[in-house]
Amino acid sequence: MNLSKAQKADLEWRDGAPVSVRFDDPYFSANDGLAEARHVFLGGNGLPERFVDGFHIAELGFGSGLNLLAAWQSWEAAGMTSPLRFTSFEAYPMDLGEMTKALAVWPELAEYAERLLAGGMQKRTDTLELNVIIGDARATLPKWADEADAWFLDGFSPAKNPELWSPDLLQAVGAHTAPNGTFATYTAAGHVRRALIDAGFNVTRPKGHGHKRHMSAGVLL
Image (cartoon, rainbow, N blue to C red; front, side, top):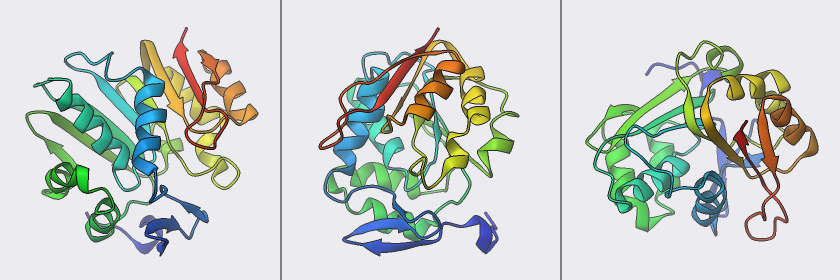
């Protein structure tokens, strides 16, 4: 993958965690990022209880791949032996060295990180079918010829990365969601929830992870 500097992640390391210089926002908390991924993105989408063969997760913001690894580990722990389908839209990908350093924070995911990092971001194994689509999701998602059973909406903060939370993009999320499909996100920002309602979701505000009072989750009506 030959990317220009403008397309690559521009990050620095603070307290053991990668931080986007472009958006001045951390990719995850080095203290509880994995727990947050499990609470927000797995729990918020009713996973692993909803897993079935062919289940398809889509994500805005691949980042370090932490959410993928949490989902992949949960998939295998649930006894699934077919591939989990996972599609992620990422404008500024980390290189493999950056991902290796970021994911080393989570020793319990070491096996999955090693399997992910062997061979790049497009792969098919017995239990994972991964497709990372590089580019601005506002351009790439509307052209995507598929739909997801669950969405992980994990862009940087809406205040710092508003493009990934725009009404038009969230309309595209709704349009590329399977019947009775779901979304979950850490943010409870009112304008994001309203845009997701307009995109066709029944939106709720469950308890957030840790000190965060609320998050958002929803089911396509």
